[in-house]
Image: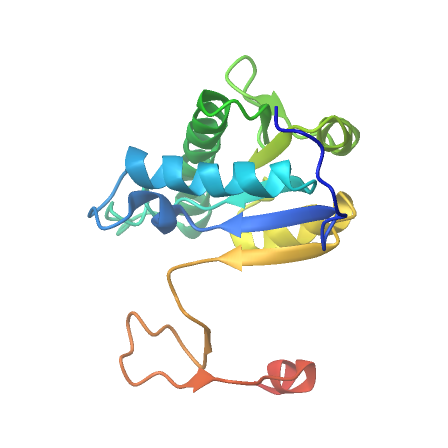
Length: 195
């Protein structure tokens, strides 16, 4: 473990929302180990600087590559949640491989594969210097992993929620599917509510 930081970090406790698509790099799907190791090295640096880090991970690298036609929405959402658990385990393993203590928790109980989500245990892990990786979304269909990130951020008393995605900003619609999507430079809370 690195020596104690000399200055206080800007944020004591960070919740990072990491898209599953970020884990595949330029690959068409799956987990690109080189990319995952790079992301985990950056997380290691943040932890070494004195911040506590929790992660909510998506599953776009696993499930979006599959064809969900014919599935009802709840079933498709549960399949996506299972993908997030696979990504959480991959991140835990990669972090530990870099010497960063980590624990993965799932909103969907899957003992003995992964620990079940427990708010108090997650906070205890963070306070002991472990990175906590949350999988399983909220545990309920019809909610995005962005919702899970906001929820977990509030539950663990995060100082900040940071979203890491392949999109470079906030748009009026999905810029991947709509090339004419408009990017906002500034967007107030009221404008979000209105639109």
